[in-house]
Length: 407
Image 1 (cartoon, helix red, strand yellow):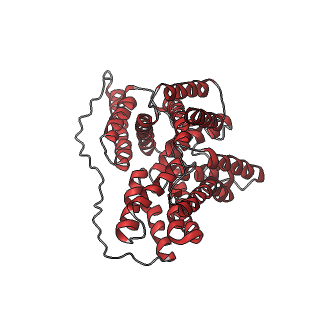
Image 2 (spheres, rainbow, N blue to C red):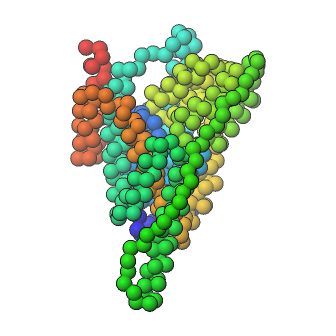
Image 3 (cartoon, rainbow, N blue to C red):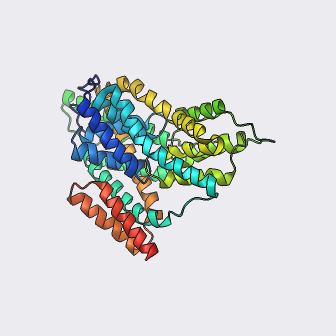
């Protein structure tokens, strides 16, 4: 983005609670909690459709800035974005209501699956459901990516940076390094460009393209999973709570990173779960709507019943509710100086490139035949042409999946 966004940082203070706005927040995020399939990228795309296009609470530029901020803090990014949007719209009550409404439906659905799992020892068949829903999710993410990219991809350099981040993401480079590195690199280039323009104005020489030679060392984040236990540690609700609180406070990255943390703590460390149970828990978090972190609900129920489910859910999401009001004062200052504004632009570009990387990976598993490609392309055409509620498309995809497998 070549200009400083007016309006994003003009509202430095959270507005007082308004009952009408609180009701808006509750209605929106309760519905998203029941219909937001597809993981964080899909959730973010749906939120953009609702708060930018349909309700016009904020601009695309401001939405991107909020997305970049939540990408830089630990925890479930889409849930933190829901909390942040609710906080800005309806103050402290909005922060709590929006977050609970987005998390609550997913928690209840996962809790029901956990009960069925304990009773019958297996998960219900969901292949038919995901067959039709996944292509719609691909279309939703693609439409959001198209709309957001038009706000930042305004010259060759942002496109080049996005392509670089995209490739490095697919090569397995750590997400946080890509976000910070993208912001820093873009900020340096902007600073050099400003310096050259100032020099040109001062000595009257013709402007020429700036070439920036760079050498970057990239690291992939790995965590050894080498803990060995001789016997399982007895179930303890305080240990359960503190373990999930730690995960919610320090975890960056995708569901694969969550899987590594959960395996280290609950399989290798505490011995409370088997590998099969952990994979089933992750699967439930993936195919149910809402935050993937509701995997904690499933695990909590397996090890300690409904009390464990509630404690685990509270613990893993609690840091997100604390991070947003803590980060907001810093976020409101990022657009004030040319230097930090350029850094935020770079993080925005990197975030979109990461979103494109996720879209590419999801597409490989979702678009597996002529019918799924047709569902995705028709859904994308509808989304680009009409301001339709994406929940209807998800429902239609589920119906197509049902007809495909059961008729």
